[in-house]
Amino acid sequence: MKKYRETNFPKIFDIIIVLLVLTGVFFSLFVHDNKALLTTSGLKNFKYYTVLSNVFAGIVSVISLAVTGEKKKNVVTVLRLTAASMVTITFLTIALFLGPLYGMARMYRNANFFFHLVVPVITVINYLFIADNAFVKLRATFMSAALTFLYGFVYLMNCIFNGIGEWPDTNDWYGFLNWGYPVGLLIFAVITLFSWLVAVLLRFIRNKIS
Image 1 (cartoon, one colour):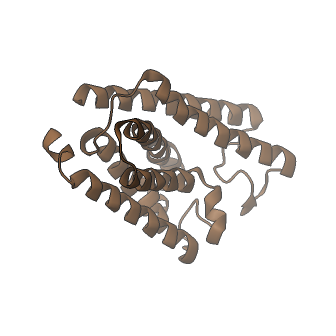
Image 2: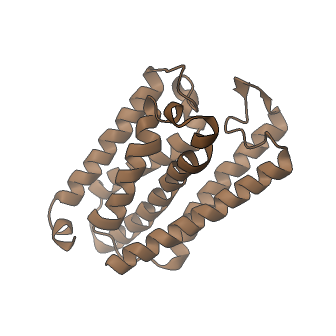
């Protein structure tokens, strides 16, 4: 893979990620699909962890295309790891939990085809095999867990102060509180821990490949 990192191929991969994220954002804003789950209309889609994590991945690719210098590359590498681990959480949550629970076909429609599947897979491939990444220290893995925890905290606070509501006007759009707040808190704790473990695993694989 070293030969790829010494060419313009990493930049091409970043451009592809940016274009795919922009395509997903376009579908999120302007193409509403009533048969798709975990989507709504317009800017309200930005309440979803999926959309936020994918947009973050796109922003990281934009930063990577813009920055130069070794110190800046080190920062970009940490951001790449964070983005890769966050979209992996999205991918695995849909593939292993929400997809089997609510139906796989409805999870990969419209914008979610890009955000639940295409962008996560390409972002991880880019981080592991394509991008010219620096060595990442273990402490960098906590950034993904911190951002995931922050999202979960805001999610729960919104449900507590504004109420859970009823479908389709619910603040518990992932259904994590269907079994009550204790179970919901446990689910978020597991997801936060899992996001850190995913970051640790991706870091380990990437550093070994390096």
